[in-house]
Image 1 (cartoon, helix red, strand yellow):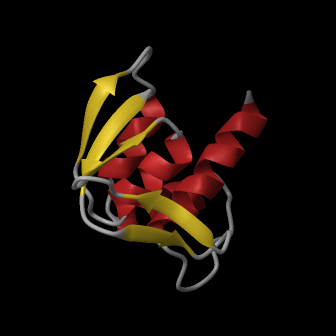
Image 2 (image 1 turned 180 degrees about the vertical axis):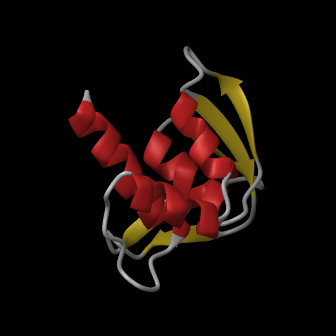
Length: 100
């Protein structure tokens, strides 16, 4: 998976306390799914350059927070009050990996 995003400056990863993306020339190329999911959740528009497989998990990025909370509840997950959409998506994906 490779996506390119348009933006300026940097995006900080507060969870890991480091730079998530540094835009150079107004664009950044991303190959990491976690980074792409975070940028999508933050409202950055990405263009897929190559994608070996289209995962159904990508559909999670299209869901609203309320829908993500319902899906997490349906899977028996406990979500902290005030959780961000990207945190809910991460929890859902981790639960799905454990199911496999």
